[in-house]
View 1 (cartoon, rainbow, N blue to C red):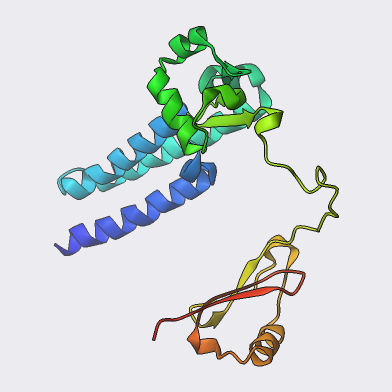
View 2: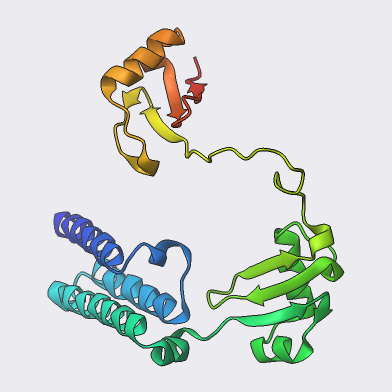
Length: 223
């Protein structure tokens, strides 16, 4: 029992390490080759846990080879556009100026229902409102509405623009967070000054965010 627990802990750590080495894109937008590697990696790592009689180091070696192979493929893809297209494929336009491209749908094996569902997830309920819809290589759909369907921007309304500032967490679960995300670095002293100015107690805060314009948002813990 102890050996099984130890194996599980070690293999879990190695799997996290392998995925981390393969890059952050593994978490969100999996390309076909990356999906295959991720599935194989999880299966190989799980085998010694399910069957204690299997050699432990064989799984570690196989997982390392797969992670190294994915890293090498990513490096080659960065250097060669032809190789990248062969491995990942290319984006395909499936709607042009409100008209569905049937040949593109057949090529991707998309049904009309698939397209309508993907559009609804983009808050678009009428394909006629779409100027271009592009099926990306990771399976997602990018949508550009026709100009008359797009919401007006501040420039369209002749309104002055404002610099966009990224809010970052400065207090999380009662603890002060100090990191330079988004070009903002807030010291402990500055955070305590903000807390005092707004009559807040650090230990009562679930989340507190701040931006470069000095705006803060506070979410208190439930009592």
